[in-house]
Amino acid sequence: QYRIGQLYMISKHSHEQSDRGEGVEVVQNEPYEDPNYGNGQLTEKRVYLNRQVCKLPSWARAVVPKIFYVTEKAWNYYPYTITGKLILKCSFLPKFSIHIETKYEDNKGSNDSIFDKEAKDLEREVCFIDIASDDIPERYYKESEDPKYFKSQKTGRGHLKEGWRDTHQPIMCSYKLVTVKFEVWGLQTRVEQFVHKASEGYILLLGHRQAFAWVDEWYDMTMDEVREFERATQEATNKKIGVFPPAISISNIAMPSSTRSAPSSAPSTPLSTDAPEFLTVPKERPRKKSAPETLTLPDLEKK
Image (cartoon, rainbow, N blue to C red; front, top):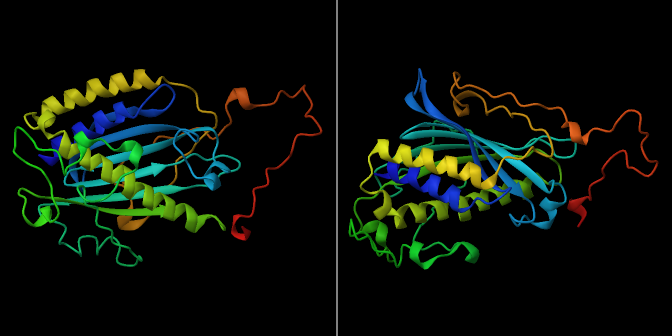
């Protein structure tokens, strides 16, 4: 059930959150087979963002272009998923990567050792996300999507009151191992903490609240039906946001090594590192003397 609900939620959520010039463009979504993990689905998406609209903190706006996009690749071998988010590369923003491994189990979050093999040498912080009790940003809140007040007409599930994990059935847990890398002195800790907090407080929490609250919409769907819904919704979403050329070039960032890497057979999509034509300065036109040769950023550690 969760597999279908997750696919439905991702498609509908992406469409609702997309608008002209900002949102999620699906570049690739097709079946994929890996010798180690078996049959799965490969998706590649571009998440277009506007630094003003997405409400980045002031220290992030200082180093992020007004318009940019993040490339996300995911290999879904349910009940195991690998996701890599690859952010832009340009002259003033170093490489930044997020690597997410996901495993699903039919329990209430009681498996403390599920990622011991993958992260045995890493320092970890374990965070429990409760879709009913945890707060979400006010601008994303809808009472109709609040598990404390929602009750399914088709399944009878809900309302989720305090202690629901010990009383409700069926129940399953989505375990995620999130690794953030931003190796820049003065910003590393701040950026990594911000991304972890954002992924917990918005991406994971809001999405899973919606999957639960939309259960009556997807509960009767077959896998073929949800794939068709996914295809039609992705097409509508791509048209909704429009396709515009990126203001800067981007390049892939290598996945983490050894067991934390994507499948060795996973395809890569080389992206140009050359600046777009409209950003180049014609050779016959001399630079203005006032144009800065380098961009100096404030020393945030001293503030």
